[in-house]
Length: 171
Image 1 (cartoon, rainbow, N blue to C red):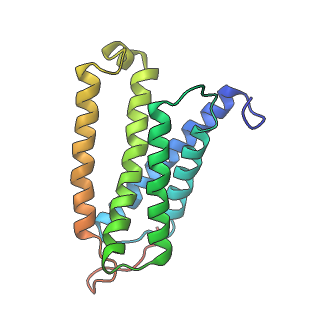
Image 2: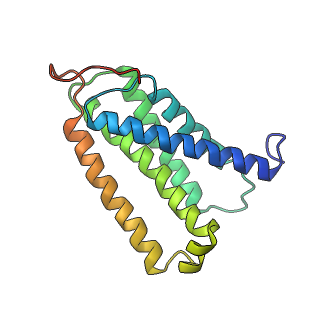
């Protein structure tokens, strides 16, 4: 039992929160690339990210795992995202710190989803049973390259105080 729920039910809830974080995060980061702060979606993305990361620490774990390391990094990046969002200082470092941290938060959610997919989906598990096979390594490398590119675009284009961009969107 975890928080009064069976491990299975808790896992389903954790996965649903992860999917919400990924879907909302994709939309939020796309907004960042467009130079917008999506005020309606950003709290959902960050809230779901916090809940899925936090709930990951509640699983019965007996030793330090890479998942715990990713969770710790995710919480640090989350803190940067929230702090820069709350301050709303879009000139100077605040602008690129928010763009980068939002993108990294999404990347970490997708990174874990991909790693879990290789562990839980039989066809993928057969391709990479230990997680060290080329199919797993190449897929994670391609994901990293895609997010580095997306992050660079986000940092370059995110400027909600520029006259040509809108400062917020609700949707």
